[in-house]
Image (cartoon, helix red, strand yellow):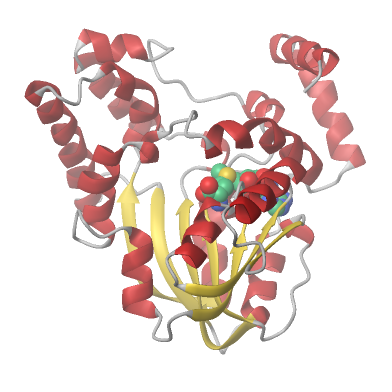
Length: 333
Ligand SMILES: C[S@@+](CC[C@H](N)C(=O)[O-])C[C@H]1O[C@@H](n2cnc3c(N)ncnc32)[C@H](O)[C@@H]1O
């Protein structure tokens, strides 16, 4: 982003009327899609994401092993991908996999590196992500088995019957044209092929529910001071819609509909909700304030995991993240 763009974004973030005007211009220029703006957002970030400098709640090994894996595979040693291939894919290596919203390409490289896939196609709207994915693939000597391409998935046209597996990891919640995408994925799968999703499926545009906000803030208030101080806020608030659109217009644009729309086209054969309803926002900010060598801090974190799991298990809260596997419905329109 150049200085002028930075200045414009700063002004926009401070002035509601300017924000509304920018939003209206976007709506008129690009009705119903945000691909170009999402591409700019991810162009700016992919380097940090690939280098591990940007850390969300899922990037902490403790959270991954003791909270997420426990809910997906049931075993802290078994990562969701291993669980997926072990449980749902017989043929190994898989002939051809498609990855939607591949970012800088670490998932696709891993699939080829560990011998799970013969060939992976990764599509993303961000040219910088695709440039980096190609660079890292050729540095790893895997360029001939990884095909990355700049594609706006909201407009995607896929070859019929071409893929054994389609993967969407943290990408569908950035997409607007879910009906079109699911139809395309349905048709691009070979007979017996499956779609695997690992996604944020919580409130669209992060419009947290009142209960969710209340519980997040109650937890925040009882955390040790050093953890609370690591967060750049005193309370979690529901973001303004306009601010969400200004920061990243694709962020959770229809996230709450990812599963309901999927069910029109696919039958879900494995569903593992894994929470995040409270911990996504809290842990993404307070984790640096915990000492992961300190048993007391670890106990508090484990209590937070248990608290969220219990509330979801007893249906007090829904789960904002889910891993699932689905196969095309034969009776869909
Ligand atoms: C949260 S990142 C996930 C990246 C990667 N799957 C991962 O898990 O590291 C979301 C990705 O979706 C991409 N994206 C957003 N809107 C898109 C669109 N319309 N078409 C293709 N990719 C899109 C972004 O560029 C970004 O790389």
